Length: 260
Image (cartoon, rainbow, N blue to C red; front, side, top):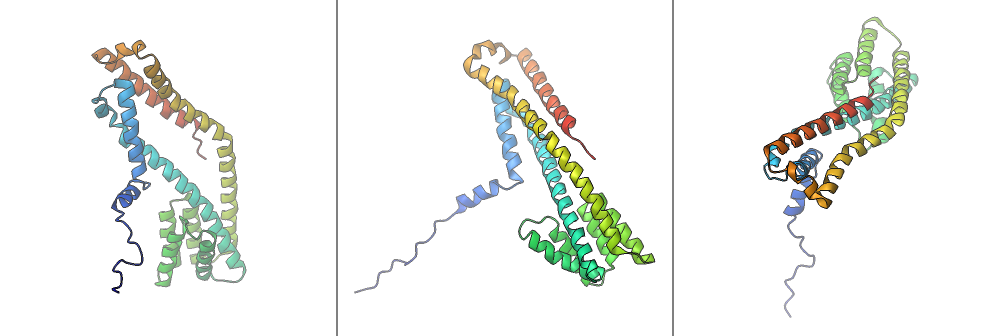
């Protein structure tokens, strides 16, 4: 008998559709999708016209900018925590008798163990150690690392290392003192974050409520607000309400934002 020509394993179907969905769900595309959906909601609730999309389309870059600011804040908070861990690892290595160059290399290995997958700081530390291995001056490599990290504490530490390299100094003590100050700063920020968590939640609810109320009135008592649609005066009033709504959201965000 002839052998069956059917393959033993099933071929996987072409996953171009799944691949395109994954591309749409990247961190860069999600704010754009959210902004487009918000534009459609606003066009319906405030104007009940397809032309309202052209007015609301300015919300997409505005929403993307807000999302970018939030991502930058989260990234900076994560870098701050990892940088404190890095300094404590450097101090521990220096106390065992390593030179600063070896301490930085050993700290990279330990940081990789602490954050094996999702470290923000690890790639920057790796680049710094690569520069040092290529005979670039340590203080120069560390200063470039500090600029890429974009933390005041990192830049201050780079200046301390540069000064100590020229005039001699206790690296361990300087780095440990900087780590202790950073830990105090982090503790204060965490306390503020805990105190303002409830207020942030209240702000999110207050931002959603006007849209929810308008949607409820539109669906249950559309005739009550019908005069606001389809005429110039209604467009002006609804546009003014929309601008005031956005201004109050920004004001609320600024009130609960505390920088130290």
